[in-house]
Length: 481
Ligand code: SF4
Image (cartoon, rainbow, N blue to C red):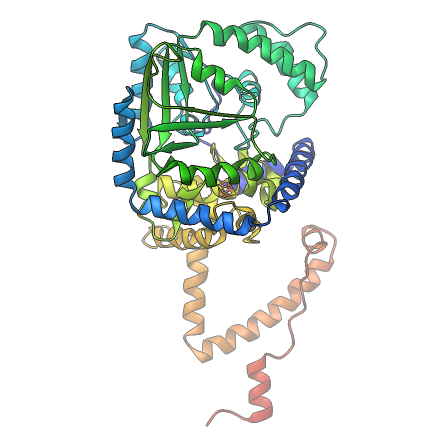
């Protein structure tokens, strides 16, 4: 459990490395096309899908506009039903709460439902530092954890692995953390799932503390909701004596009527199913049934920063369906690791800078540029997040944040030079003559064997005209009086 995104290079560097991995590209193309085709089929079955999308977007916006009110109502509802509510400003505070609960019960291990929020705050690493092992119980997360790997997709964290690789991970790594995989394990999906099931069942049955996230939190009743496909979530939420749920503050929905809309949008957008197999709901403590001690950690960790961003706040509508990843031409080629975060793909390209702020970290600043702005992500998003518009706005913020740098970036130097040239007609005329001449030389050079020829093998490099428009105008119409 040592893999971490900390110290990842900026997107262009990481993407170049990923592009060299042909097996990764093959795995990704196969997986993303399968999911997106399935999604397109089930979405086409819903005649009012566009109205449903609009309703999802409007409901999220209305809740975010009065987030403080809904959060206080959620807290009151949870407390009334016997839960203990903790407020965490950042990752450190949230991890400290979970570690404290685990320590209070004297445990050295917890079982976890797949949760983006706990990955975002680095909970596994924080607990490991306290001597507490956090066992992932989602199949894909288990593969990532056993392989000492990093997740590369929101919904399918091990999307970059194929069956043969998974078999190898199970055979070589399972024994070190519990029940070993059978010696004769093949790469048949049923056999792999069964090996994981037996391995995990032991952990479910002995764990005293479970950790989860939540897809939604209903303010009016204090109900937390986890949507999943494998049933591991249901086990984690019901078997342990103590449950700690780490929930981003943007997960709150006002009422069960609002929840209805999102439960119709999410399964079709994420797994391409009409209805997901398991929807678990719980609120506080029910005597004699399920965990008898329930903690809820309401996590900010940059969300109020994102909420303050006039254009970017729509990213908080995200229901983590991952549809935008599966249609993104950039994600399909480079995979999730290149984004250096648990939130990869188009949503990661906006969410990471919004949560962490721009101008401080070159890796974060590189993410808004990790897009062709083709708009496919917006077309599929079930809550109509205009990701391209947010990307463009974030690019402007990145540029603005570097205006006073001592060593200006190449882009800033180029823009200043352009401004200087364009502000004088004489300088512009000289530049036109020079660029025409230089451009023609460049075209000739590009025809010679070497890097130039390689670069132009898939790109156009038109020969500049011998005479610029302005020179032609002057020659044919005479100088301006
Ligand atoms: S941005 Fe939209 S499409 Fe992407 S994960 Fe979030 S809800 Fe899904």
